[in-house]
Length: 199
Length: 199
Image 1 (spheres, rainbow over the protein chains, first blue to last red):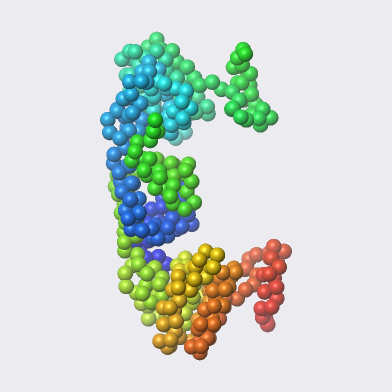
Image 2: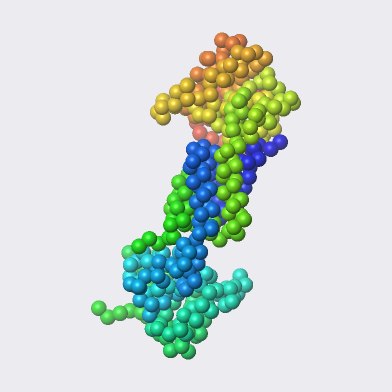
């Protein structure tokens, strides 16, 4: 005896495939959809299709865009001489939110990870090298995550980039703003001491 | 400066409207959809529309069905003489899972709740009375939740039903199977003692 009508069962399955959504949550979400006005259900379905179809990667920086160049690559106000290399499009958003950076980006779509069989050819490295070799780039900022894989990727790229005579930098390590010293881990404290600056 | 392409922003909003999905989760889900093969994104969108369109309420018991009578009302193996009254379609599933009940259901789609302005007219009570008055029903089991509103609803319905000369019962209260006595609350223990049965 099946408990749900087939279309509901199918919808539960679809929700359960999403990351971080377990069986119970999938049921709750599916029941919620049943109770939506038809128009809202249609809007939801359309949003899925529209996002999947019309969001593409910027041919220059591989950031998300709606066809053509992304707004950052298209903007003449941004400094094309500085490229900030990030692992993921979400990292672009995080850095944009700080309003501190006025250069352009390059999204690798991953980091080197031998454990997960991700090698240099699986990342958008070739197009980064092309951008730098085309000239006009003064600095490349490595903004991969401060974990083992992010570090390794930054190091690997910096070795590839230096022959082009470009300055390669890494985000500063240190105590996060607003945190408490007593909760900082040893590695972070050590880095913060090493990187201390004169006031 | 907007951070997401518009279609992605829209999809994030749609996910954020779902119950229990916060802003960060909505972002994670939307990015996941972007990475789906187009066919899977279409399947997901279709599942939403199909569920919303083709899942209806059974005209007899108000349980979910795919058009027409629900499988339980349609089955001749189920005993139409016993009606189990539940608040929600999910409660039908819970009881079906126990494989203990062979009667039919009646789904109220809510409980009486003056605080939330839910009165008798907002529930599927009229159709329950019609079923009972049509004859052939020997017993109505009140399987609303054992909380204040569920209790009040069960009591209210039992008063409406008794004039029809039908037996009205309530699910037994007591210690949940597999639990520990020391963790049982006072009210449950009291009910368990009151309802004690000879071995």
